[in-house]
Amino acid sequence: MKKFLFAAVALFAFSFANAQDGSFKGGVNLGLPMGDIKDAYSLNVGLDVAYTWAISDKFDAGVGVGYSHYLGKTEEVDTGFGTYEVEYDDAGFVPVFGTAQYSFSENIFAGADLGYALGVAPSENDGGFYYQPKVGYQTEKFEVFAGYKGVSVDGGTFSSLNLGFNYKF
Image 1: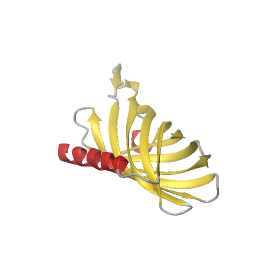
Image 2: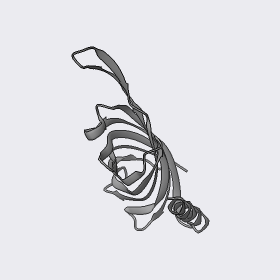
Image 3: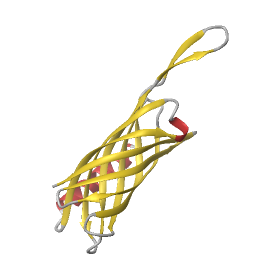
Image 4: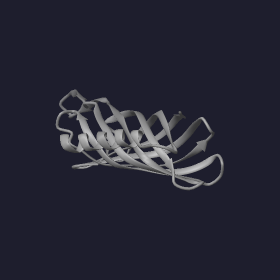
């Protein structure tokens, strides 16, 4: 796992060092947990940075890294003999991914992030395959997007429906 993280960071650093016709963007996103985790988690908060290159006039591709945090809920469970509280631990991931984006017009785009999300919290979280298809609106300086973020882990999927904002540098 440490070797994978080192290789991903080295690839990202190499990308910056050799970039000639690329752009850097960074942003935030908020999401509502869906599917397997919707009863245990209340909110997803994320940060991402990416560097992309123009492959053609309408297509960009690159690499990125981020942090995604799922806030655990506390629920009251009634057993018939009384009630007790169940507190779910927060979950955190560091996604390392390839990213691609196709512009249908000057302002409308669709894209996807694919990679691996390293599990950082709780301690038994090993991480898993990371994916995020998204559509959005862009200008020369920013993007606003809607996406479906997922991390496939043993026993289920951490997924959320997200809204995000990226600033282009």
